[in-house]
Amino acid sequence: MASGIYEMLKDFIHLIYPHYCLACHSGLAKGENLVCTICIHNLPRTNFHLYPDNPMYKRIAGRLPVGHAFAFLHFHKGGKVQRLLHELKYHNHPEIGMQLGRVYGHDLLLSSLAGNFDRIVPVPLHAHRFNRRGYNQSERFAAGLAETMKLICDHRSVERVEMTETQTRKSKLKRWQNVEDVFRVVQSGSVRNQRILLVDDVITTGSTIEACGQVLLDAGASSISIAGIAYTD
Image 1 (cartoon, rainbow, N blue to C red):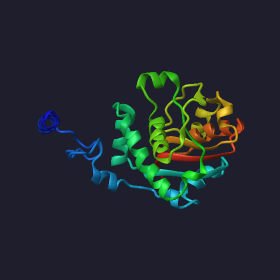
Image 2: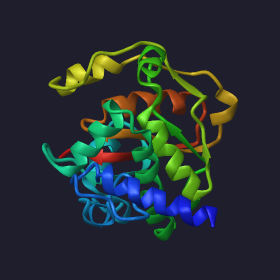
Image 3: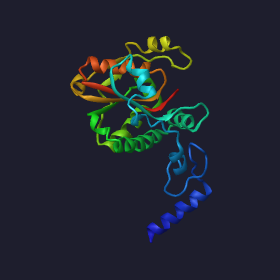
Image 4: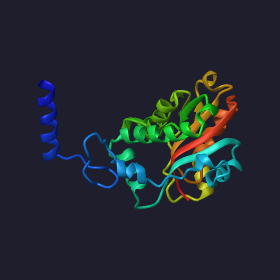
């Protein structure tokens, strides 16, 4: 009886204060959370994980020896992916990262890629930026991937020792100079001889994730692969 009243109360509150999809702003149906089913289905997937020699792999492989490189979604200015990432990073919605990670983790499981990795490492935020935001958006995505793929999400082995300027509007060279020497492996025993899937939010030139991947290889990781929430063409 009590549970029935609770459900009726929830439905009543939902009518007065509806929850909206953070991608399209339509009302969410019962059982939907943050992003509606239609938007999840229609997000612009790259399917890069199905094509080893994809554009993202080509962009990174010439500078960092990677086993695989793929991203979940295409990033387009003004599109739904940009809106979701803005909510994730700036409007205190870390759950979006988890949700997208779970969905993409399922895609990677179906492609049998999960067996190529021992642990997932998110690109870290500097402590000051982490404390201001309260979470690392890349770590939330990595945690969703790890949950679905049954892998370790290792957010402690690497730290960002310098806070860099925003990469927006920087040239390729300036992006690299901006992230050079800003990462450090603090638990080398955790990454030595490990096949690591290194995760970031948006892959643009790849400079940030390249710098982070290099310190992991220098610390003894047996291989590095790259995953992102989104990829910019």
